[in-house]
Image (cartoon, rainbow, N blue to C red):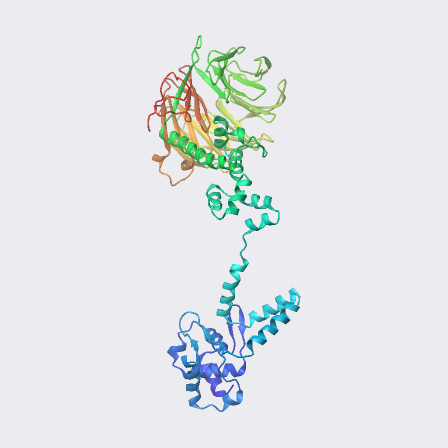
Length: 588
């Protein structure tokens, strides 16, 4: 490079090599000289429009018409710059775009007679090499090309790299892999996949993928499971391919019907549409149903008249009455083997479910047993005597006291627990958290202004109801109050929640349904949280439980009400039943 041009290059701020896309473009000395000379000779406004000098260098390097001898550069005069510009004119079939965008340099290859022979010879040699050598050669070839050539190659390769593997796998005898891949699709995607081509539709049909999708939903969603049992299409699920099960088209048509049922149920919850059934308990002396639990076949209730009554859930008839307590039955829980009850007579009794025989009586608390819970060999009871008792349940007849938890300053009204925490609530306005494994105290949740009457705990969430007429949501790990729900006019006596809703009952005789997800969202307005208020009880609501389809509640009015959100006919009557009263709802 001449000193004159080098000086010009330094003054213009040109580097001798330019970094482009992570690499360095090192040009041959002759090309560098020509490039610099050209840029110094054309107006600055022309080449300053480029986004970088490197783009100009890339484009100029692609040109085939620029002379490349240093001797020629040394003898160039002022006229040579003009010649270079002429070389870049359209007359030479060369395009040079200088702008703020990428620079593209291209030149049509002159037709030569021996090109085809040379090409065939190269291909013949290429075919003789190993795959590794072929890859290395192509890599080196691509590295010598310009950016716009890389774009052409990319466009050529892209369709070649695409594979219809769903069609290709069955051709290799791998139908089960194609079916397994498509089995992970949701309903919308599965519909779209059926429309791709006949082969995809065949794989979906023969693989019974709509059946597998429904089975997956039934396994993971309680609402789907409940519908499968109630509408009795579960008998067509979880079976191997036999002549007994319908074709894939049956499940394809079944799926939208299930979705429609789910949407109807959700709308019934939101709008308060339900069918009401009533059980009159007909207590002999004092009236009131303090506690209950139910399943698909029966309802077991604990009454103020000291008895335990078992009801047929279909006919609503009383199947059995258990007697033995000398005080009101305040709490109960049962599983497939035993019923455990707590009473105001200060005892805990264990009953055999099928026969009603008393298997065990636990005498520990000094006053009324207000609540109890048991699971996985552990039972926790609480009492008006301000204590909490933790029991080991080896069997119904082998129950031993493990630990007594003391810390509340008033009656302990409710307990709940899992493998990590025991949670208790008291009339002293506090919720206390204890370690399940060690029974050591962990923390206290403060916030309610009056005594706490009810509570449920699951995962990190605690929901409590109080005689301050409010419901509070808590994060058990940090002790923070997440939300306060207001709406009841008297003491909130019972509360339950699932993944969607909170249902509460109070001494004002009302049952309220709340949107749990909205309640957990701090941005949700308080006015949107109560979805519906249900009024049918004529007395205080003592206890309730619910699932995806119904609420079952008990009251001081000596009744048990079944609020059915599934079997709602257009006129408000249940399908195939004659309830004692039609449904009633009152909006919030």
